[in-house]
Amino acid sequence: MTNNGTPDTVNEATFPPTDLAAFLRCCAGDWLSLRSRFSLEAAAPVNGDNPATEVDENSWHASERAELSVTLLGANGDGPDGLALQVKGQAGLQQAYFHADGRFGNQPDAAKGVSGQWTLWPDGSLDLQIQQGERRLRERIWFTKPNLRLRSTVEQLDGASPGRASFSSEIRRVPRPGEPSPVAAAPAPRTPAS
Image 1 (cartoon, helix red, strand yellow):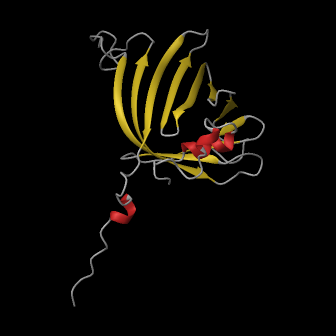
Image 2: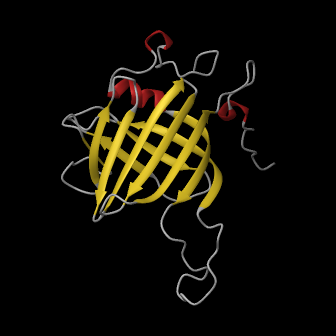
């Protein structure tokens, strides 16, 4: 980690990243995420099962905060590294493996698991697309600074009508200058007295 909190692997002289491996290295770290979610489909009944019940007029929008930990995964043989994402306080780990032919998925083998297409645009933004039955999910991730990442996600239903959408602003968590890292600051385990 450099003295301004940017990972050592991010070269600010070549920012934004110009290839997928550099983009993924930029993503590694701990992030504070602020996300707004929007449901553009018709509002659902409050209890979900009984259409005769009242509809929640405010259910189309929600905001949430989360702490994310993103780590690099080893190269899969035919493409750049992948990423693993852990949301603090939630079980489960999300993984994405990127292949040189423009495919990505949640398994190292491109033929298995959920898969989609990735494109790294000349402006340094990463575009991800996944087709799930009649729904198409498109996510765009880009950096405005090495420590500020933005994400937009849009779901399109069959017939190109919009479904759900979200926008996230993610700020890299860095220690203050002169402050020890959280791992170094942890107290040593206590041993029982003899």
